[in-house]
Length: 197
Image 1 (spheres, rainbow, N blue to C red):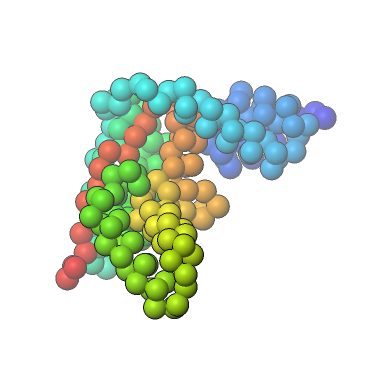
Image 2 (spheres, one colour):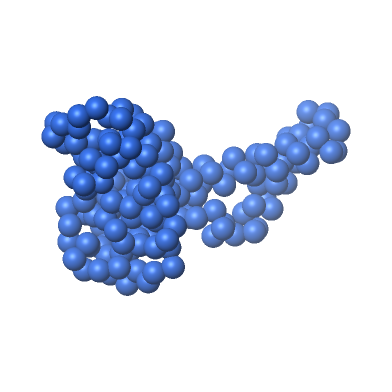
């Protein structure tokens, strides 16, 4: 199948990947746009894994104030070079992360940052709920661990479904940006402020 410039442009708009990467992806999947998106995402994830060990000492701090001025967010996202930090694609990504934090109120960047005391408190709540329902102890423990796994995904930023596209997590979006920008990136920290909270 002949790959046209309009096909490449459409894929580029959908994924943010480079023109040559888009053309190659379309050639690999015989012009199927959806398969090309999947191909590029897989490539981006593989590319992100290779870059994971590289130092991220540049980046941006974004301040986002939600309309109505009741919620505000500061977030620091790091990359390898100042050059990438100044690109519109990186700036848009950082803004999207800040907006997502305002909307979804995560507790931590990554689930492994969760304090054991918080997890133990949640386990006690889930255990009490299971026992009050009269479930056998071995079933209660399975329920507790299942709910803890769900809790971690709900409160860890990287595991949350992206507010603009619930089909991908913030972690998936980060890996895709690493692939398209060609540098390791990390969401280092954030603070969320809410009036009265």
